[in-house]
Length: 301
Image 1 (cartoon, one colour):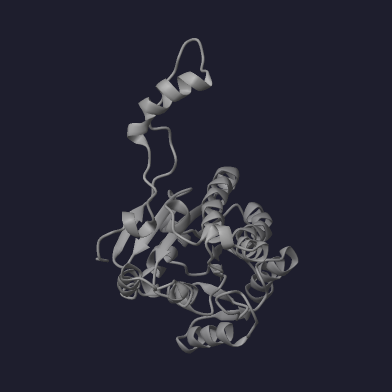
Image 2 (tube, rainbow, N blue to C red):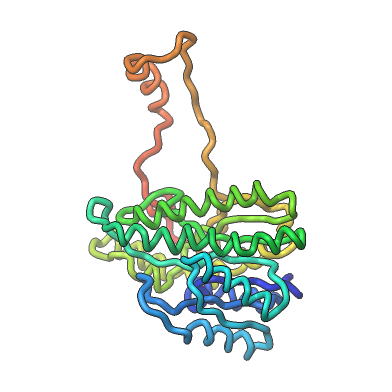
């Protein structure tokens, strides 16, 4: 499905990114495997994980090259795209998968914990996407696949930084889709459910949290890869600006915010009539304070 294509996969040294990189190569793509080799919290660096995935791809007969630049700096992100151009002469797709976690309840979160997560997920997705954009525009083709999360789309405890970044990624993807559709460039999101090193840091202090993590262990990173490969291919040429979720053998199309009910008064509103008329009329459609696990409450299929 991807014969002749060149795909960059960020954060591809392990977990979901690794399986996406391997699947892209099996589908015929030449792959830039980007990973700085940091901890789940984004600390440290190691060239080994990216090169190991490259070695796996090459051993299976595919073409790949490693890159260890960080997505969180614009110049460094530019070097990721330059690696594709220098190694393979073109760039056809970007999978923005790189991420870190620094979970903390909001009232305890530090500025550094906020900045670090926003920088990798949201800024990183922007920087790498922006570096690829001129090449996509010039060749009148290109594909973005971004990783979002139900922590942002729905909600979760202790992840204000991660949730804000991931909901921002969904908005970024939609904006790219709108701005670049005239150049035949597509942009879509995947919210993955998969047991990975990053998910492995989720607290398991209560029985409910332990049960949730046990369910997630059934969902391997390889389950995410087929959708990512398809979205990067011409088979998904009419799919743009969408948000999907993958949970084991399930694929979901996620809704996007739209008006669901309205009220009006011909004379306009006062704070008092908002309190006595608007809020009571709209209250039946209020959304509960749900978390991702409340919405996806059944065992993975």
